[in-house]
Length: 324
View (cartoon, rainbow, N blue to C red):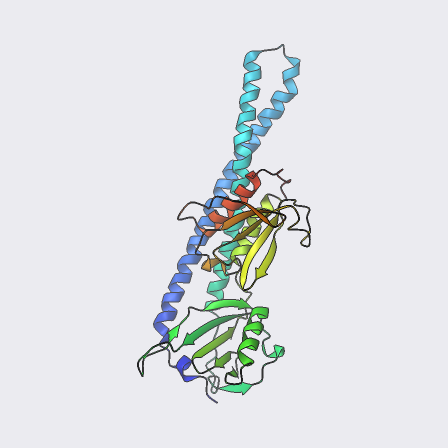
């Protein structure tokens, strides 16, 4: 049986060029933002080291001098400088950690997009198979879905933009579609999988490159700077990140007492590039809603959004855990 014709007939060249240009721009932007974040962090680290050295020197010798209001004021001023620099340095470190995840994710997305494609004879043919987990071996898949909708004869079907899903999710989706005998599962020589149904077509392209990082992983990197663990949570297709108020809490006890539940819209596990809404962070105590943290400013990047939420959690009325 041939690969579903609607997929084969798509005018994909212009779309692929546009997608590649978008990915290149995203990778360059992520690289630039990471470089800027590292430079700012380096500057803050140097300034913090200088002020700490001054504080240590003042503490060492202040008792050897007679009491002096000027000397006491100088030490108080140094303390105020430290009080401003230390949280600024921690925020910069969180931003740098998040930009690094976003940068690596953008690189992986571009590398996957540019992966070699076979042009061998017969590679465009697909055979009907029965679903089984072993037929879905790749670590992740890029999924494109088309549906008929309301269209005139000869008009192309509508399409969702490709989404990258991990192996467990791909197996779950394929198993759900395959459970209907009116849908057909096909596989071609390169391991691409297809679902052909009356009103829908799905294409699963295996990724032979590590999947890009998720938006939740960028958030996890920022929170780790403050010493907070994170745990993934899923309920009825909605995903979020749980941050226990007590950093010593295990995943099993993460919702005991005060905790934060964070998502972007209804998701927290999409590829970093798909992050299109600010993080929303709700505060709960033993499952009861308590508060909502302020969202990041409009126009914030994913990394800035992650650093903002990490700082907001650290500044909430909780003892701040030691940084890792």
